[in-house]
Structure formats: C-alpha cells, structure tokens
Figure 1 (tube, rainbow over the protein chains, first blue to last red):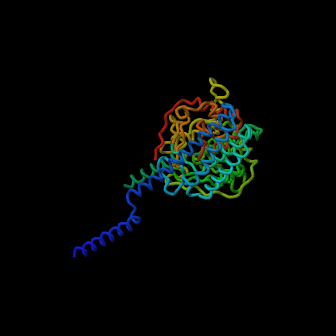
Figure 2 (spheres, chains in turn cyan, red):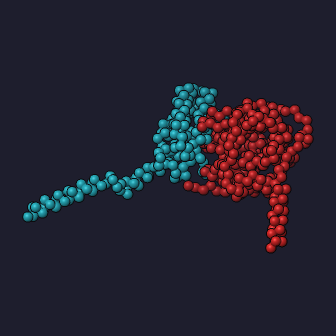
Figure 3 (cartoon, chains in turn blue, yellow):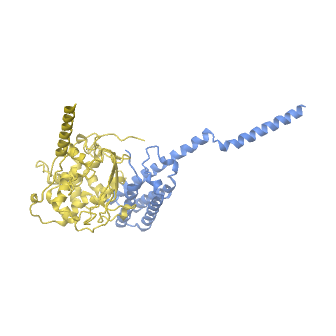
Length: 164
Length: 307
C-alpha cells in the first residue's frame, strides 16, 4: 500500500516537474524577459559608445590635419582601427527592438530603408579598409580621412535624428 | 427683422472687403528695376548660400546622387500645418519658372508673391530672402536661367484647414513680415557685415535655428536659440554663444567646410545638407559667417524634450 502510494507520489511529482519544465519556454519567466529587454537597451548604449569613440578618433585626426599635433603614422593607424571596429559592429547593433529609448538618435529610416543603410555601412567599411591600406604620410592621411568624413556626414544626414 | 438682416449682411460685406484689402499681395514692378548686368559667378554664390538646391532639386534616396542643377522640385516638407511639396523652379516654360520676368522673381523673394498674384507660404523663406540686395536677387535669377529645364509639375500642398486658404497668408504677412534689404552696421567690420548679410539674407539660418510660435513665425527674442525641426522629430541646436560654448570662430568656419564639430562628430540631418552648400563657398565667406555667428548675443532658447 505504502509502496503504491510512493510510486504514485513519485509519478505525480515527475509529471508535475515535466509539466513545469514544458511550460517554462512558452511563458517566459519575468527574469528571462528582463534579460531580453536589458540587452536591447544595451545595444543602444553600445552603439552610442562606439560612435563616441569614433568621434574621439576623428577629433585626433583633425588635430593632425590642422597641424595642431604632429603627424604620426602609428596614431593614424590607430584612428582607422577605431573606425574599423565601428564598421564591423554597427551593422549588428540595430535590432527591431532598439528603435526607441535611451535618447537614441537612430532615425526610423534605418528600418524603413534597410537596403540603403546596408549600402552606407558597406561603403564606410570599404573606405576605412582603403584608408588603412593607403595611408603612409600626412597627404594620403588627409585624402583618406576626407572620404571617411564624407561617409560619416552622409550616413548621419539620412539615418540620424539628433534630439538634443 | 428685415433691417437686422440688412445690417448683418452689410457688416459681413464690410469685413470681407477689409480682409480682401488687407491681404492684397505686394509686388515689385518692373519699372522699379534699374539697368543691371548680371554677374553669374555671384548668382552661383547666392544659389549656394541660398540653399536653393537643398529644397528644389529633384530628390534622390542617396543624397550624394542629387543633381543640384536639376531643380524639378518634389521634396516633401512636413510641418505642423501639413505637408508642403516644393515646386519646380527650373527654367521649364510649362512646369517651372521659365516664363517669369525679373520683376516676378524679385516679388517672389522679397514679397512672397507669385506672378499670378497668389501668396507663397512662408515655408519658402522669403522672410529671410527679403533681406537680400536687389543686385544679388537679380544675379541669382540670371544664374537659375542657365540651369537645364526639367519637365514635371509638382503636386499641390497638403495642408490642414484653415491653413489651406492661401489668402490668409496675407494676414500672416501683415503680422510677421518685417524689414527689407540688408543695411550695413557702420560700427562693425566689413567681415561682420558680410557674415550678417549671408546669415540673415540668403543663408536664412534663423529659419531652422529658431523656435516658432503657434502661427509658425520665428520668435524674435529667441532667434538663433534653437528649436524643434519642422517635422517635430528632431532638434535644431542653439547657435548663439550659449549653444556654441566650446566652439572657436575657427571651429565654426571649419565646420562649414566639412561638417566636423570640435568633438569630432559630423553634422547630420538637415545640417548635413547645409554643409553641402557652405562647402562650396569661398573660405572668406565661411569666415565671415563664422565671425557673425560667434558674435551673436547669447540667448537661451527652448530645451529639447528627452525621449
């Protein structure tokens, strides 16, 4: 009798455990949802950070081009390396869930014109690679940076909306 | 009862008459234009700083592919009053301004009046262009006529009632249109005066960089102090010393050449389009603009809403 009850209890527990285990993926626990939401906001913060880093690199480039700092080939390569990290990661940092929040300056055009956005990112990537390959002195640096700067402005014209 | 109706009718008629008279469009007659030899190079400069191509050129999804010389119109300008569709101003005789006289063009830029006597909406910034010197307006017209004709008429504006009643713009002009061709300030340098002229006349910078009231007019005491973009989605910065605290005059001039800010950012949105224009000016003109902007009286404007 007791053995039957224990078997019955074990079976019931087992069945309940299976039922709970089966339910978990269907109704995401609050913890799982918070993690997903946090990573979407993280994406915004990540891309804002990347852009800020690129801005710092551009600022350093301007100093060299204006003669406010001596031209240094190693520094130039560092600057383009920063842009390359940007170019590499940016295409993955605009998921559907990241359209609003955290004062993002991303324009909805990014999601409305995905072909154009991809093309702009591809051009930026190619121009940074060319800059890395072709820069050897101040003149070639100026020429390379001018092209990249034009890419920055061109993308911002269509795909960024400054709200502050 | 009969008498009351008559009096009411008379009042309505009088009011309508008064409205009609008050909104008669101003024009510049041909007789007011002295003999003038066009300077096409100057016309081209006015075209660049005036930003004509930015609104009037046939649009393209890739801004690098826009042909500045093809002014077929078509850009849609969203505003709190509805959407304006920018017209064709190429020399096309049927769909553009090919049949316009010089006086027609001056009336358009100074008074906001079309050749057929209709008012233009101030989405066309004649509020600024009216400060342009006559010679510059005429040079600009001569330059526009050298551009290729582009066929295709642009659709009419899509405005909410009552803003779709064009004659009402006549009242708006009475309330808000001020000043005429630029007058030099003798106490300031030639460079400052050139900058003041370019910024307040053809450059029409204040049209974007200022907040507007509920009727869409620039709020005078907050001129240049920033405000929302016309479509309401973004924010145009304060360019008085309050907003440009970390900018030197040289920073402003160099920004107008390549769009790069002192922080290493690159101008986007509408300003990227402006940089495409100012990049074509002479270095002296960019320096003049920078001198004027750097010397603006500091003003606090509206704060952007954070989302």
